[in-house]
Image (cartoon, rainbow, N blue to C red; front, side):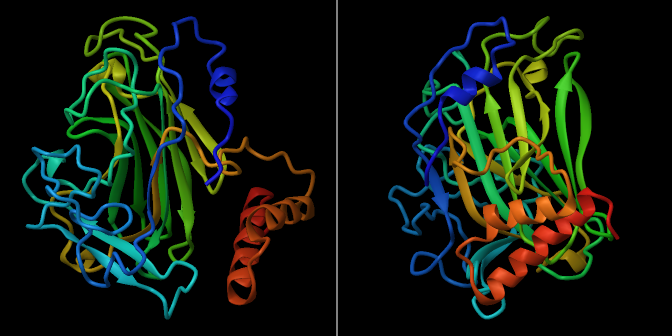
Length: 342
């Protein structure tokens, strides 16, 4: 993958008076596409490295610096799914609906780590993988409903994580009409604020979600966990390549914590009809830099036609046959919704 310039970080953070810390790294990354021969249809992704191999010693909750996926076996509904016949553009994907039922975030599925430790100077590490090596974090994945029909009350969250502490959190909820996305941040100590990102994404369509964090030393005000504390980290959320929200991390509540992977979390108990369903995930990336061409500012299109033409060129060039037709349809739907065309 090609990664965008480190200069973007400086431009994003120019307004902050707090000192910046660690420079971005050379774009080390973990990219899991769940393809064979490393991943087989029907098996768990537990203890699989991004390339599908099984590292030794194996990953465990007490040994989670190994670059591999961690999934508790008991009570977790997840597996690799082969979609080659119905969705050849994605082939093998990961299906997830429910984590373990013991109340611990550490017992929910975690992606393989990036090989980096992202955070501000002096950040605590729940994973025990060492001090921060970069001040930036970026995670991205493709997702869609595993079914083309509604799965009411399906709720899965993705969070920047290093073991047992979230630092940026996006919830994907099926409200029956489609998939809704909500971002959660903290302010005034441990007061949570929710921001709606998008609503009613079609069940059967693939979308790409990106979570980007620029860590900044200290807080904007106050002390962690105390009323009046305000964070100064910058969190950008991207949907299908465009920035849809900017907020902050959970540092006003939990303080400076490092992150190096994605936590996938669901309610401990889900309706029985959701078992075997859930969401499909593909191309799960953890790095410290966004791939070039993905983290774009919201477009300012003058017309529906300009919108469609621009998005065709950005997302559909090189595709053929059914893949091109589906891509064209997705870009038209996006532009029609953007301009309120029915």
